[in-house]
Amino acid sequence: MPYQYSVIKQDNYLRVEVSGSREGINVAQASLQMWTEVAATCRSKNIDHILAIFHLSGKRSLLNTLDIVDGVKSMVWPELMIAYVDTDPDNKQQNAIAEDSAMSHGINFRTFETEEEGRQWLLAFSPA
Image (cartoon, rainbow, N blue to C red; front, side):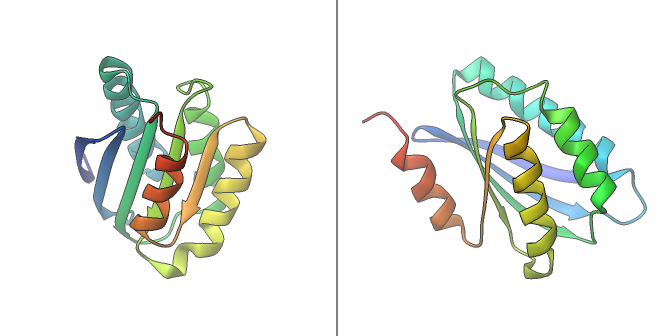
């Protein structure tokens, strides 16, 4: 798989850390493969919150972004919340498009500039 990632249960959320490159691969296919496995892990552990930290080089096209959102929408459930942190500030515009597209498809997905911001957002919605 072109992306390497780890999935760790933390408090009331699943922490997913992703590294690798978007260069020379089918970005949508690689992303959907990873998100399928993450969603299955969430369901098996009864977890509704994901903190996803991405350390990827390369760009994702607008078409890739829309294909990923379209593919992910069948995997999600109403309680699922995804806090997405991209460590590459050059991806800020693409991430805003991804957030808007996800939200318009009923996916509770927010982008954050730091891991702490994403974590705080998830914890604000976690049961005490």
